[in-house]
Length: 133
Image: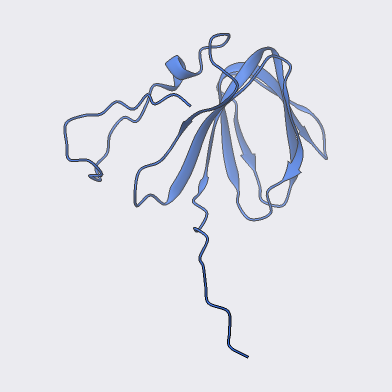
């Protein structure tokens, strides 16, 4: 994963609006590795976001997110969104809503595909004591 934060002056962990990265540079088709290129990691956030690259003609198999709606924005390359209804072409600028509970797959085109996902942050795992019997 590449750390491409643009770090304006300010105390570490401070909460203020700022540019986090340049998705165009990170997602440059053909030069970016496959997998997560960037993740939102700021403390105290309510959202999660990831910039992901699928290699040329690579695929993310059909899966269902049971709890979270996801927005997916294609930033480079192209591909196909597979759904139970029909395959939908994806190109740079395609903004897609993936409702929770729906099955979907992604297949990259011949140049690969980079996309940004944004969704509500999952609550962290909590360790609890077992109830006494």
